[in-house]
Length: 293
Ligand code: FAD
Image 1 (cartoon, rainbow, N blue to C red):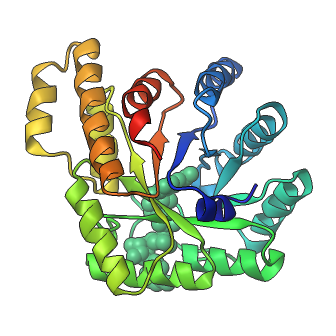
Image 2 (cartoon, rainbow, N blue to C red):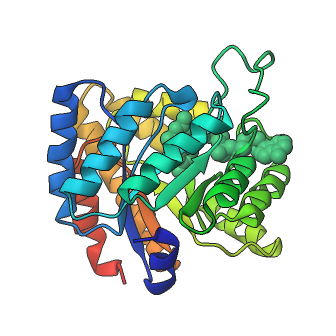
């Protein structure tokens, strides 16, 4: 099923993001998680892709296994950085051949330390809007295409307005929906949606929710992707950081409140960054399910 089409017909989508594990044990653990989360009847699930192709085979394998063995709509993330158009074409053709219809089209991060010196492949796609155009050019409407959105602005962008200017190019190239970077203060999301609306952008934008279960790990991610963790939440987490149970309790309570507020404000969906674990997501879902229309 194409996610763009599904989103036209439902009020609120629920989705879960996984990463492709490095080991067979990790993959077994992931499929146990998927089994738990399948019971929540998600609208779709997605599998990340290592920028530069580092997880190419693993991402493809996990996407294929979910497609074949689970009763789930699956979306493959695909980053263009470091790939030639021929490589991108081959990956997409491989997905088409097995019936995968949903792609999250991304640029990927420039490798650390190469921010100034990185050379984009001359025969590749420099930015995500070029990737979206390339997919449309080669495959027409076969794929439903999603893209990334940044309520606090992308870290490389000089301003939120400039980032939205480029976001619009992805929509004009054929993106049908977007999923946001994690954020911990809903006011950023509401401001972002207002700005998109002023620019005449009205594709569904699904908020990405990261339940904090390991404070220092998420703090590191947040710094890397430019997401602000509110000061009072940081202070609460710092007090209990040596107790994983207390951290998870605070993280789950916080994400639940965030989701409740988003649902009350009519969001199109919730996309959970699961980190391949089900416990926090299942618990948040249990608490918010009566609000999901
Ligand atoms: P783009 O939309 O291309 O934007 C990148 C930067 O360039 C922005 O600052 C933008 O303002 C600017 N820009 C865009 N177009 C132009 C242009 N034409 N000219 C000049 N400047 C421009 N990373 C992974 O490696 N694997 C994943 O699976 C993955 N999944 C993600 C899922 C979600 C929901 C999100 C939000 C992010 C994900 N990322 C993933 C991270 C993403 O790859 C990085 O944030 C990356 O740095 C930017 O990718 P993008 O697709 O947003 O890039």
